[in-house]
Length: 322
Image 1 (tube, rainbow, N blue to C red):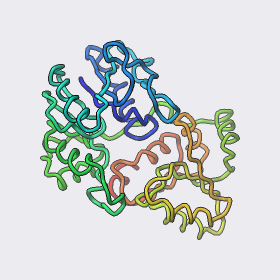
Image 2: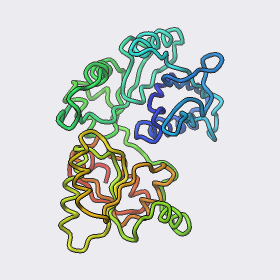
Image 3: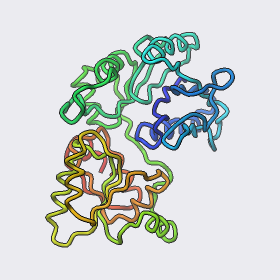
């Protein structure tokens, strides 16, 4: 299997977590298979292979952890996507794939190269929000949104949708026959579990978390409907603190301004390691996830895995998740 590992360049983000966990699971379930994972823009070692832990990421290097501690990991290797804008990914890489002739190509990030890869292909569709509500996104969209994703959906032999709602969007927006779509919901990482004692105390102290708080986890942007959450929180007579975990996304300024007017009971945590998130879920009294639209919505599922109650909006995929 040849795998698009572009999600591994942001291993803390949703597609990166998905790529890592699903490939780990497949390596265990099918130790007889070989997995060649292609990652972009990294210095290659001899033979074009990449060692785990080389390259760049948020902390200065790309983590390629899939083969660590996985039974059958010797069947996993890494190669580099040619590092030439557009041509490298959409022309040179598929030419190499046609020579390699894998049994299947897996587009874990939801897209195929524009040129034919020469093998049966499967892609995972994570979110089609931009095609439903373009106003939630920057007006100028990349080539991938305008051409690559629509082209990929028309050419893929099979499409994995992460929710029934996303499957409906795939069918209605792009005319993909239902017979080509399989709904495979997300799972949760093994570290997401109920916790107690010293583990929680250490994280509470490190982030200076209050005793009682409502939690939001996600990118701070209009589609997450944070302004509604902030207004609802401000109307409460006896307010617990509100902790917002996530980076600043597109058009965040009105949200940031509102947070600034609400005082010191609203806390924003930007740089949170994935290993700390389970404890933060456990410490919260409730997770609020009022998003207007989600392709799936991992934070509610992750919070429930930690035993934390959740409140979500009645829209898109979220009723399926909870």
